[in-house]
Length: 144
Image (tube, rainbow, N blue to C red; front, side, top):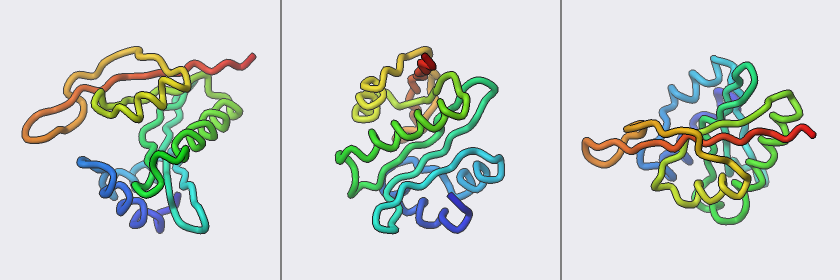
């Protein structure tokens, strides 16, 4: 992902989330040196991710798939690639937060073996003045 991709990414982000990341969030991620990937099909962005490296693990900050490409295995394939890539580059685990209300994402992460290790109360914005908790998930890599 480059600065010039942010406009395209923001269109997808706003179409798939009621509380999307801002262009500034993506710019800050790029400036911080986070891994920011775009998955393309026929030259068109269909998914993207942002991964922050920590000393011994990675934190998946964003993994999104364009609405028209959802439920086609895109997220599954992209997540597998991210896991393989970060494992090969030395990460020992991946962690992430997910909304309890995001059933499809929770099922995806469960299928890969992520386990809940915590709960962040009132982490996500929600409708009205309310907030939604975040489930903190982690997958420890098998380097065997």
